[in-house]
Length: 114
Length: 223
View 1: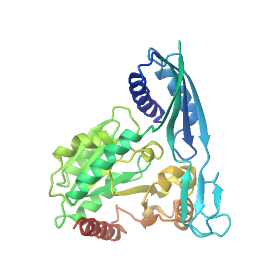
View 2: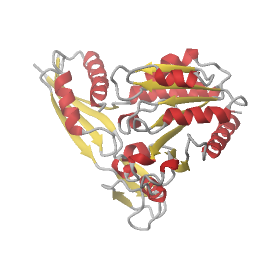
View 3: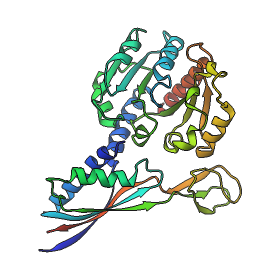
């Protein structure tokens, strides 16, 4: 489980942004986590709560928006959601699909006190 | 007190990706093909590397970066074959990150042909971390079962090559090679597949042939 490593990276970004904005503390943090991001959102929540103690985000709430795996067929151009992660077009059976979203792990936004 | 919303939209693994891209560029420019080997513990990564070393050397120069939670054992096995090896001991971390590999770059001989990075044995976490490799390989050993690609999709969707290892154990191990390949290619249709028994030396020659082709292509693209 590498969620704690991911949260450590998150805090590097959070601290840098708060410094930039001359913020005092963080109220909330929102992430976007893809179905194929390779992390478990629930474990990220736990890791965040462990890590935040004695930091600028000690009272912050973490919100995670789960993003489904969305692909587009390079042949028939149809867009579809793939919950099974099978990279075969549901419509024409073509196997060359372009991933549109669902692999990302992004810090979307945060609310801070300035 | 003023509350302010800050829109960030930054990749949480962005710093790892940046370091990895830098490693890939530096090693590729030197004409070194870098290969990241991922698998669960005990799938045969080190044994495969020992066998690859027998086929690649002395015509080609290779080196190995070993990632383990503890011990220098794997690096010692590789060194025993006369191959330079560096051991990264993660001390508990379940995967290698690009910055760990980046620290070793000054020690990598510039006249290498191949640099292999043997990741920490784990079919989950290493898949999220680009190490600057040109080719990512996932190994699946026959005793693990042929149903793994769909259970651990990230390792298979992010890999370029699938190497099914320990084929000499089938039978008695009930592993359907065609099923494993079919499942893996369903989650990643562009996956190139190999079947090997490193202990018996079967299939390794073909794998090494593909490695040499990939090295030639890298150098041609550089020229």
